[in-house]
Amino acid sequence: MLTDNNKAATIGLVLSTVPKYSETFFRNKIEGLQKNGYNVILFVDYKNASDNDYDCKVVSGYNFNQGKLLTFWYSFLAITKSLVLHPSKSFKLFQLNKKDGIPISKNIRQVIINHFFFTENVDWLHFGFGMLSVQRENIAAAIKAKMAVSFRGFDLYLSPLKHPGCYDLLFRKDVKYHVLSQEMKNDLMKNDIRANRIEVITPAIKTEFFQNIQPFTQHKQIQLVTVARLHWKKGLEYTLEALAYLKEKGVDFHYTIIGDGEEKERLIFAAHQLGIIDNISFTGKLSQKELREKVIKSSIYLQYSIQEGFCNSVLEAQALGLMCIVSNAEGLSENVLNEKTGWVVTKRKPKLLAEKILYVIDLSDEKKQTIRQNAINRVKASFNLEKQQQEFVNLYNN
Image (cartoon, one colour):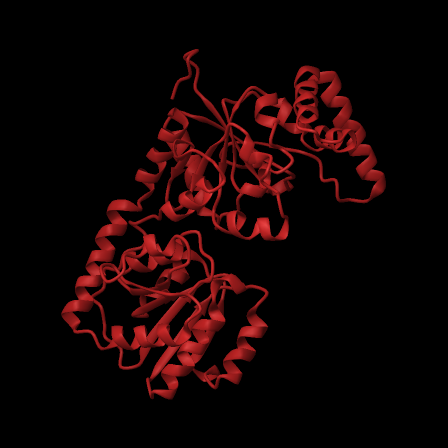
């Protein structure tokens, strides 16, 4: 991909840390951009020694959370480098912040903390999450780059509750936004952002990896599964309440929860109190290969989240031929098409979820197979990596 000067365009991708092996979205995005002729520079707040061997150039700042003495020393180094090596960019950032009414002390702090952005020339500066752009709203303009921001769900819906007004300045800037669903786009437009400034690019998966070549086996015991971080927004407690209702109805089932998180102890206790602890397995976090093999053994996938940007795990389950029942949280109703590729249930209604599970169990084998095949076909056609990578190329070209 060439710029007006016939040079390969450079994308600066901003994350907190270098993506781990399991963070496939960002790794796939970087790989896709490189395949399409872009240079990619990864900007992170700090990096570890193990992050040096990465597929693209990694630029990091100082870790300012190592005690007062080191913080003072790193601040001195940062401001010295900024003023001596990059005076015009530093002054430009300071002037832009001043124009926005940022107090001088916070202004100087922003120059110090964000000094490492001055070392590179990029055509686009793309913040991988909404909150990463906060207190960096003028960095792109200071280094003469275009600015893009991705919202992935929690940062659009939950972060403003924890940090009221956190995006007020961002929403006044000339920014290209990336969101995961049409519903997220509609919600972002409520902040007086024009529709043509927002691109919907859904998550994607390695469809060739998530496919089930084995014939589907009908289990006598109903096998249900969820892949999720054990966090309150995943709605797992509501799921457990629905399953307790199933047990009352005499349904023989087993539910596997794949993932780990801070809510594990509370969920185990909830399952115990609901009398379904013997019907539940907590596997912890699994590798992709282990996850695939475990999910294939189930027939129904549940994702009854309270808040969900889109959810790769639901895409993977559909690709593997599971019947998916999800909540109507944000992007899930676009991930799964109700009664066509799965079923969508109003969130926070565990009895409704239980009734939908019973409905799905009682469907004819022919109807189940139709839903499964619809889901498999749609994921392969609409949520593959090649399509997603091209959509990001289009975003940077517009």
